[in-house]
Structures are given as structure tokens and as C-alpha cells.
Image 1 (cartoon, rainbow, N blue to C red):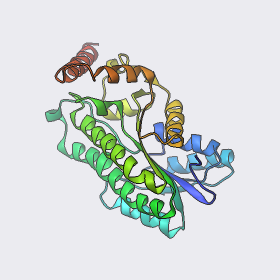
Image 2 (tube, rainbow, N blue to C red):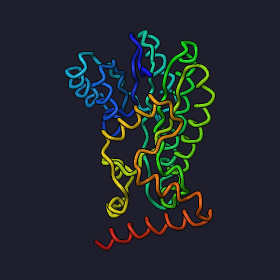
Image 3 (tube, rainbow, N blue to C red):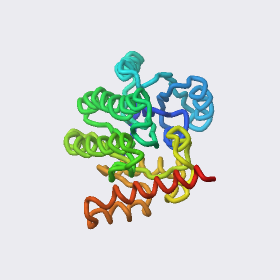
Length: 270
């Protein structure tokens, strides 16, 4: 399966760092023309120059805060106005919050939900229609292994990623007859600045299997090429997720709460 046709482009959100940057680099190695989206124009322009040397193609840069409700429509209008046919949409932009729910500022929670859910949904809706009309296209929505369990101290984040996984899995079957693949990618703990933004205690990361962002991106693109509806990136994560099928429903949240409570207490004592 060819992810991007001749004359088409790949659009990556959250492209200035972490998994989004890794997707941009992986696609540049495939000589794909890119549209890079994030809040920091300076970081995107620096990355664009670097990737042009790899792909031989200049990447378009759009600095937008996708947590703003009008941003997805602005992004779509911009690509349409430039005559860019988006064959591949990577909805990567998002962040997490690791703290007791009642101690987290409400404004920050709503900002996260606007980015993780509302923006992703809007962009999928806007770009899916023209893909179906052309009879080709791919959408990769970055979910998380957190989507498989109710996550105490990650309550709103885990719920947002459960939405992304369920939403993407459903659309996979809607879009497939029209030549469009929709995949939910579920990375676990990845070596990015996610934990810093989330306020995640350092001790928690040491208890979880880790993966490199570049590896996550390659697995995601492979999942699209193989038309997979959902892809867990780390085999070690797959083991505990599979075990949830035989565990009583009450047990996973209890274990998750104990894990993150222990990690937080350990860090606070350090």
C-alpha cells in the first residue's frame, strides 16, 4: 500500500517534537512531501530545513494551536487554499495530565480534551471526506496503551485516549470500503517529553516498558500500510493488555492506582 500518491502530501500534527517529529523524519526518509503543524513556528522551520536535506522536498509549515476550536477548520482551509491533497493525516498532537483529578486546574483539563478529542475529531472529519471522494487515503490517530484501562491519576487523559481508540476503530470499518485506512496507534511509555508536560513523576517511568519514538513511528506507518485498525507498539505492553481479558473488571484500575500512587510517593520522598 502506498501511503502518499504522486502529488499528495502527509500532514503531521504535533510535529515539533517527540513522536510527531519522529513521524516527520520517517516520512522524509520515504521522500514524502510534508505539512508540519505545531504551535512553535521556530521549531517547525528548523525541522523543515533539516528534512528538506533528507527528502529533497520542502515541507510546508503551519504554526497553530490546535486546542483552539477554530484551528482545525483554519488548518483545513489553509491546505485546500494551497491546493495540497492530504493523502496521509497523522493526528499526533496531544498531551497528558498526571495528578489527582481534583487538584488539576479545570482550564488545563479542558485544554487537553479540546486537543486530544475535539481537534482530532474535527481534523478526521474534515480530511476524511475528500479522501473518500478520491478513493484513497490514510489517517493515523495516536491513542495510547492508557486507552485500555481506567487510569487513576490519569483519569481524563486515559478517557480521552479510550475515545480515540474506539472512534478510530469504528471509522476503520466505515472508511475501508472507500479506499481509506484509519488506524489507532497505541504506544506505551515512549522516550519523549510527554512525562515532563504531564507532570509525571520520574519514578513511574522506570516501572514501565520503554520505547524509542522513532521505533513507534515506524510501527505506526507499517500498521497503516498493512491496514490495521489498532496497533499496540510494544510487545511487553501487549502482554499486560491481553491479560486484561481474563482479569476481573475491578482489578486493572486498582493496580494502576497502586502503581502511580507508589511512584508519586517514592518521588516525593526522594
